[in-house]
Length: 89
Image (cartoon, rainbow, N blue to C red; front, side, top):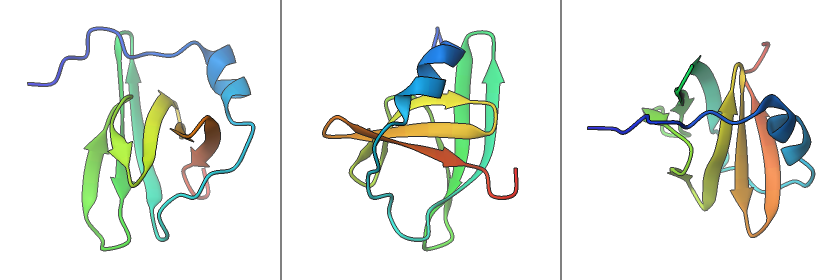
């Protein structure tokens, strides 16, 4: 069972976190986010078409999910971050 005890990230942290680019696996697409008082998760479509649910701390390729906000997700690798948005969102 997943523990969603408090995975929310303050909005200011999310807004300032994406400062440098990292390589997201080719073909990876953010297709949805769910945020609630004490939890957040995202649905991501991989290049193979598989849809997976991720939460802060999970890995996508070599990147770690650092934060999830409405319509966006922050990924981190080796101190670099990238903001991933829902296409057309």
